Amino acid sequence: MEVIIASSPRQAGSIGADLVEAQLARNPASAIGLATGSSPQPMYRELIARCAAGRLSFAQTRAFLLDEYVGLPDDHPESYRRFIERELTSQIDLPSSALAGPDGSTRDLDTAGSRYEQLLEEAGGIDLQILGIGRNGHIGFNEPTSSLMSRTRLKMLADTTRRDNARFFGGDLDLVPRHTITQGIATILDARHVVLIATGSAKAEPIRLMVEGPLTAMVPASALQLHPHATIILDEESAADLATAAYHRETYAQKPAGRDSS
Ligand code: GLP
Image 1 (cartoon, rainbow, N blue to C red):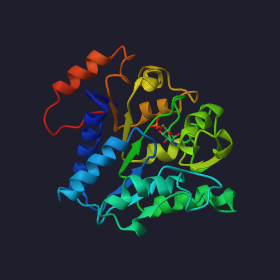
Image 2: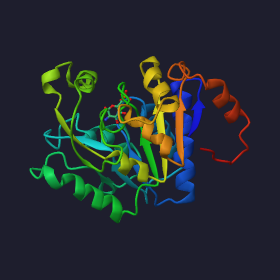
Image 3: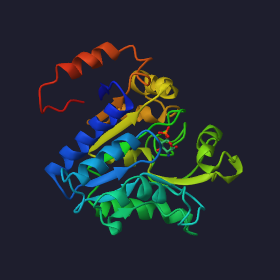
Image 4: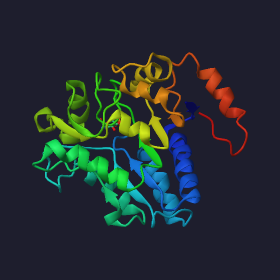
């Protein structure tokens, strides 16, 4: 994996936006996987600004959500579809019909995962998948002990995750859904390029475990060690516990222009 240590969350967002811009320059009809959470927000703001400036266009792009809560009404402001519409897609030129996500309001939860897998397959797979990381090392909503071979499916949230996400529900834990439909770890690994953004000191420990720890279902993000093209964009705080930080800084500083490393 390539680890890039930015000087601030804003710079991390700008580096992430560069990768999306380069992907769309290669193929304007790319399939982009979108993550919720606060970590990608500076990148989304940068993409909105670049789109407004005419520097890039999502007019031919298709976008796919990483995960979705189960049981929230479609128009609930904290559904992940609404979050992404509010924070990104309504502010760029992506057609609203080009955004898809797991169906969290379905009655048929048994097949919701495989139906989403089929949609991803029909789209030709994800070209660039944006990810965040949970404090417990989750990616998407694949909580610790998730199968490293998992596909999109129903998952129950860990208590720590529900507590972390209660801030979006007015701090009321009872309002946070217990279940989600999330891309599985193997589904995420199928993306041709994964870009994980983590900022802030709360992410220092899961980032250390993901980058330098063993491959283990206890840290679902460690599965990215298996990916041939994973870019991890950090700020100083989330990189603080890395024993290999100096190596990553030097590698990035000496990276030949235009060369992508992993
Ligand atoms: C949620 C999402 C994850 C995200 C995580 C971290 O649990 N399902 O995709 O990575 O939150 O969010 P934040 O970036 O706000 O810390």
